[in-house]
Length: 311
Length: 253
Image 1 (cartoon, rainbow over the protein chains, first blue to last red):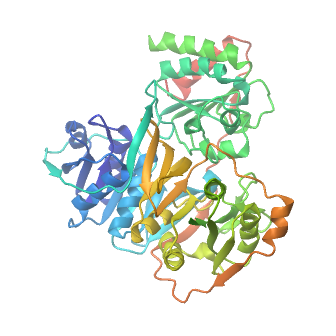
Image 2: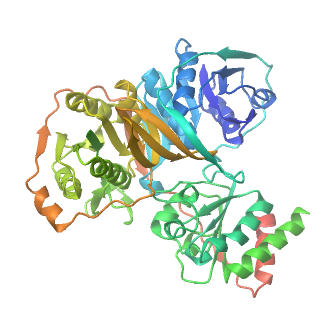
Image 3: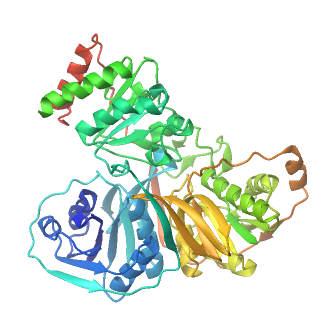
């Protein structure tokens, strides 16, 4: 049996998590026990994408610690060989906490797998994407977390076998305050499309045309270290070294020259578009399509063109 | 207050790194090494707490070889009181749980009020060692702090969450991992560097390293991107052509 943790937002299972159902079945060819945390869940997606069982774990906890302990209580007497988590921001943390509670070895950020000499081996980025490492686990039971946008989800309809699991656990940490974001933002680590800005945007106001483009594309806003260090946008948007490693289907780099640290964090994007004034900017070396020009002219025009085709 | 800061020595992130031709490892012989950037934030946070309270002891703890002393010396120059090195010739050969178990032993011996470290090491990026330590020692854990304060015997920790900037409260002792913070790590002063020469780096040689559960097989360079094209048309035809290519060639719109 394979255990897969599905992240949900307001009960709706995230696409990244649905990818894991497809990945889990293809990689391990075993029954899938999926579980999610919350008060309610839209069940049908899990069963449409290949979950054999779905459990909704509920508990009156608020922190990642509490959620992890509740998951541990659910898993501790189940016979699960391999546990799979989404390598999102919170997914990685929960993967580590649950694995440690279960005393399992863990490989984070898996992007590929293989069977070699009868054993599973897993590939993941190291040194911020400058290299990849294949690893094997010498333990019958183990856990992995898997990066978003690597394994496309495929439908695989199953009969609905659903149960709830309610549990009380203690939390030693607590959240005393949250400054909620004004607008719901898409997390760059999980986005399918990223519109990213660098030094060339010139200031906080310079992100405005990028946000408009992001809106028509339903994209997340990314940023280079230069833009974050200048205080134009907060660190949660930073891509690259000391930021996030991303692998979206489309990455649009606006006014980003392409420092090594930035390229390492986004080079596995499927399609890269670069818009920059400087024809010698290193970003053009890894871009699939480049436009040499002023982003304040090009980006709004691009937004208008895309609006046309999206109707 | 006694704070242990876990330190890792990593290849400088601004330098290109190549995979060895046989895939057995990374070509590191001519690469400069630095303190893991996230550990630097952890150390800076500890120094700020010590300065605010006007008392305290900061102990650097690492698993590594002789070369680690250079990195520990840097941390001592920034203001830590002393350092402890768990001596292993090739620390890259150990997995996260083995490293964690070695550190756990020394943390127990010191019995600190807090353990601080980076949220991950920028070289192997395992993202597990700290959590395993906290869990085994039954220490409350907060992941990815960007600011910290101590009040009434509790840590107040700021971190970014999906919902927004959150403040967490955690008792002492706790383990806290640090992201890139709202403050920058200090540079060692000349005085600090001079004083660091006299500060002790204790060495411990572990007897038992435990079983290795995760084994490296081989390294690979990142996939090569095929040559891209610059759309060499005047504005706004270049934008129209880009949208056409994204739609018809890349099939992404």
